[in-house]
Length: 150
Image (cartoon, rainbow, N blue to C red; front, side, top):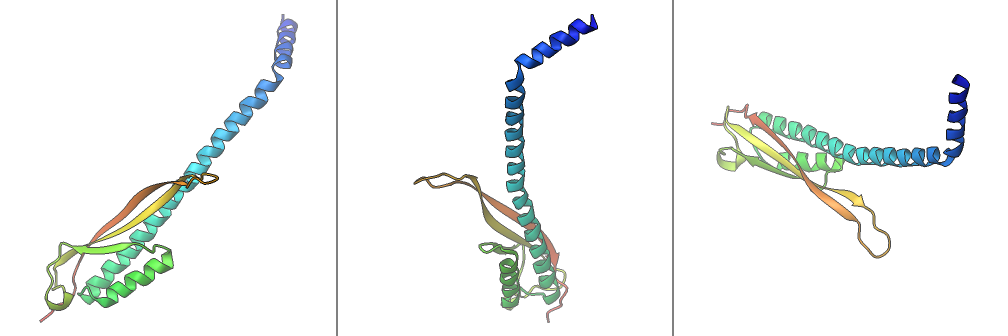
């Protein structure tokens, strides 16, 4: 009985040799496409983490200086260039300014950092342009001035 089952299994596998290779190739291609997709999505998380870090530092600088002035803009631009986020924009909202962009003690403000990011989906060959998806990453943080202006 056992010999008959083993003999029939050997005959089945000997007749089906090529199917195992084709199945393996299909599984391998699917796995590699999933890995490639994860790698392209990983860059989104890295850029967003860099944005959050820049936004935290800008908010802290505004809290300590009590103003939204040229020094903040210079800090923001230098950090964006260092992190490779050229094209990012910073907007300060929910704030009441005194003269000269100063923020009074215990007044709150919100900074919104936006960065448009393009992800290449298809890299076309020949005369066709590649296909991109444009995402706008956003980081929003609140802060409170620590400076009393007379």
